Image (cartoon, rainbow, N blue to C red; front, side, top):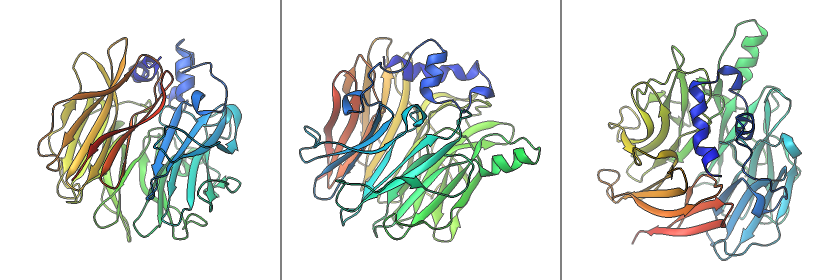
Length: 408
């Protein structure tokens, strides 16, 4: 079943813009490939996407979507067992469970938990981002409410919690598209919007637009630099309909210059549903990885910048040439960087890892660290202290949190 997620990107050169807003399951069903599973319960065993967060005291928080519900559970033994899940929201078939959609969860030093997810408001794939809070470590949550008051579509929230406990959230916003369409001027894609909360998610500052022209259905990567500034990476719609990646620093004064990561030359009016990943080291190096099917390069690639995005290294191709490669994810601790991705050989899906101990100057050989012959979620990386873990959900083996590295 993993085949449906990896091969899904190949429809882009065939189908046009009318498909751009569809969720991933809809893509697959219309292609005759079915959904990930007929599993219908709201439990973790039927989840299609699960997002982890490790608290400083070692507790694992896991948020997932299944059966039209958003649930959260806690584990004190690194995911071997979980307490009874809390259903935070229920939206049925309108819950956004697309290829790049997943619930987002973070927690602060006081044990307050913040959750964000999206659901579709109509049949045109216009979505709303809801947020919910817990003040008791995730045992109970407030009733979900809309992140913003704007009536246009908002989708794909990405969260990061700063060292001072403040919350940064970025998302794909379509208010400018809606305004252009209303005035009779057609506008493609969406925009990158963001906001901050200074009170643990109770309230958020007025949202701002970081970039008016972005892909409308690819997740946003976010990481903090040594200045405690969010660094975001996303797919930009450049002039001529080229959808390549860029990074951007969000300072206290607002969004800084948009920095193109690579000139891939992917000209398309469709939507890849395949967002990038970013991690910033303690040295300030921006590490980025992404998927493209551009005229200049095609596949999954990695590059880094040592000057805050002003320039990037020559892209390094990831994975085997004869395998379908997808879903890269990065994590940086000090000068140590971990990079994982998925490969599908026609029968099995494997998670492959590379590691660098010198801030991306050199890398280890590729190493297979997990595999499945069934449906699987994206591989994710999280850390607690000096330990690094792979978080991976598969239908055959369930949820797995596997230690893959440690710095001394």
